[in-house]
Image (cartoon, rainbow, N blue to C red; front, top):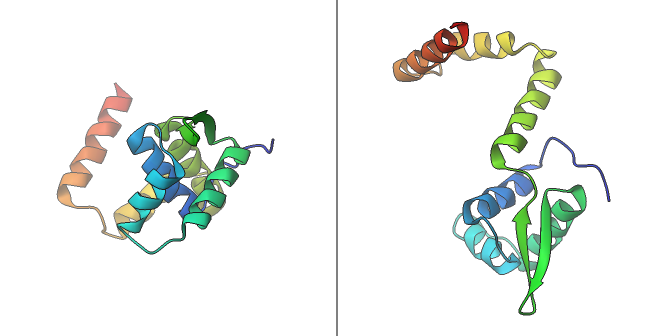
Amino acid sequence: MRIANTTLTPQELAIMKVVWGLDQATVRNVYEALLTTRPVAYTTVMTMMKILEDKGYLKKILVDRAHVYTPVKPKQQVVGAMVRDFVDRVFDGAPKSLLLHLAKDNTLTAKQRQVVKQIIEEMDE
C-alpha cells in the first residue's frame, strides 16, 4: 500500500467530503452526490475511490455485493495536514505570512476578523 499523501487533488477532496458527510458510502452514493454539482462518470468515481483506498484515505468492506467505503482518518486531521502542507509550500512554513496575506488582501469580513482576534486571545491565555 502506498503512503498517504497529505494533499488531496480537488477530485479526491470532493469524494472525501461526500464520504465524511455520510460516514460510509458506496460508489453509487458518491456518484449520485457528485452529480448534483457537476457531470461525472460512474467509472471515474469508482477509480478515484480505489485510488483513495490505495493512498490510505478510505477502507472498504463488502456488504450485500456492494463495497461500502469508510474514511480512515477524520476530516479535521486530513484538512489540517493539507493546510500545513500548503503553508509549507507557499509560505515557507510560516503561518504568520498566510495570516498577513489574508489580512492585507482584505478578504476577511469584520465578523471573521473578530473571530480571528478571539482565537488569538484564547491562545494567549
